[in-house]
Every structure is written in structure tokens, then in C-alpha cells.
Length: 83
Image 1 (tube, rainbow, N blue to C red):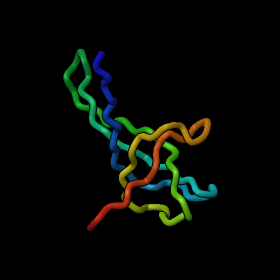
Image 2: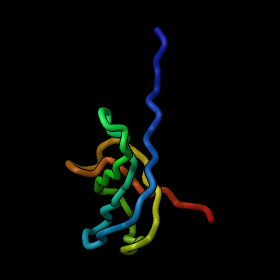
Image 3: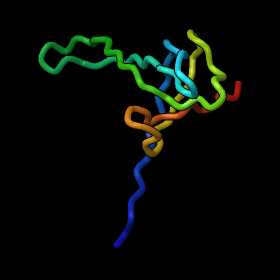
């Protein structure tokens, strides 16, 4: 029996809130093609992500990666971008 491991999602977005302790809210925007009409639409979703030490501020571009649940709403953590 072979075990398969799920590849974690990596998303890019902007920090829209940093008011919680060790948590930031990241807004992720994506383009989706409408099934019937074929028009591309912009869809936006907000994710809570773990930010140990509150290092990120509002407006910063960040990458988040899916991890095991940290709390009820938090399933992502911030990845350090090397640039």
C-alpha cells in the first residue's frame, strides 16, 4: 500500500490586518474564468496566517503555506521570502 502525501498550497498576497497576536490576515487575489461566458473575473479571499513575533505590517507582500491547523481559523503560516 503506497502512501501519498498532499502537496501544501502556497499562496501570495498582501497583509490587510496585523492587529492580532502572532496572526495576520492576508488577502489573496486570483483570476477565474467564468464557465458559461468565458470572461475572466477577479476573486479575492482572506486567510488568517501565523506570524510568530508579529514581524509583518499592513501592505507587505507575503507568501503563505498551508500547514496543520493551528487554531479554529488558522491553517497557514508565513514563509520568509528571500529577496
